[in-house]
Image (cartoon, rainbow, N blue to C red):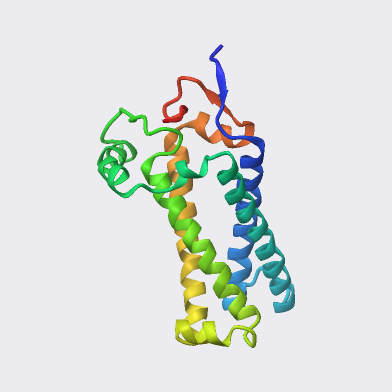
Length: 202
C-alpha cells in the first residue's frame, strides 16, 4: 500500500468547501438579481437577495479565515504568484496540461498556474466584496461609488467579476481532473500518495 501524507489540513479543506458553496450560491443568486427573467431559479427577488447577502457574509468569513490560517502556518507564501520564477515555469506547465508532455515538473504543493489564480482571486474577492457593499449600502459609500465612476460602473464591475469567477471555476475543475484522481480526492480526505507529483513542499 502506498504511503499517504497530509496535503490539505482540516481547516484548509473546511475553508475550501465553505468558499466553494458560498461562491456557487452567490453566482446563481447574482445572475437572478441581474436578470430575473432569464435566470429564474428563485421564487422572487427578495428570496434571491436574502440568499445573496447571507452567502456573501459566509464568503467573507471563509475568505478571512483562509487568509489568517495561511499567515499563521506560513502556507500563504506558497499561494502567492512569484512573477519571475512562476512565469519561467509556465511553458512546462502548459505543455503538461495540453497533453504535449507526460512529465509533470515538481513545482511544490501548488504549481505556477494555481499560484497565479489564487493571487488573482484574492484581489478579485476583495474587489467583489467592496463593490457588493457599495451596492448594498449605496448611501454609505457615495464617495467610493464616485471613485469607480458611479453606481452603474460599480454594478458592471460586480457583474464582470462574477463571470471571471465562473471562468476560474471551469479552469479549476479542468486542472483538477487533469491532475489526476489522487489530487482531487485529497480535498476530501486531506491525504495524497507520497510519490504523487507536487505533493511535497519546496
